[in-house]
Amino acid sequence: MSSTPSSLDLPFQRLRELRLAMLHLHKALLDSERIVYEQFHGRIKTNVEFFQLVTEHEWFNWLRPISQLIVKIDEATSAKEPMTIAEANQLIEEARSLLQPSQTGTLGQRQLYRAIQRDPQVAMLQGKVASLIG
Image (cartoon, rainbow, N blue to C red; front, side, top):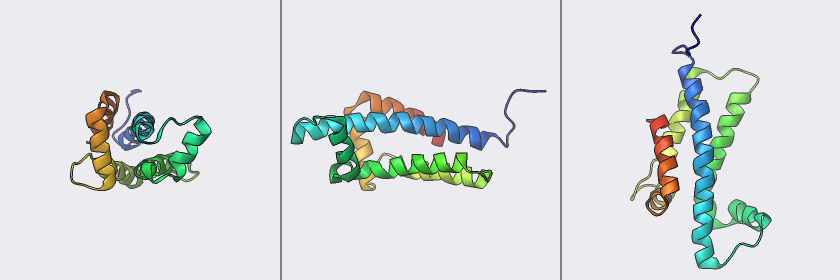
């Protein structure tokens, strides 16, 4: 019996890999945005203060859809009802749309583009995500 995944398993495996890559990218984006935020507004003193800013301050608004998509993927992959291939592909498509950097696209796409330009770690992790979302 072969240990390689069947072609039916590939969207699910890809989605699991994408979720992990998105988590790493999201963390790098948070770290990068924190640095820029602190340059404009001063030092963030505690992690609690940072969490409040991330969840409530308009500066971090553009990151929330990424957080929400990661949660959506988590919920879909841990649901009692098995996810369909179409649902897995739809989540991958949402990631493709959301995580497409652009100088002229949506606010999130423009912010992602800027983060890639200023932060090599973000650029590297975005490359990993891009390879998974094709």
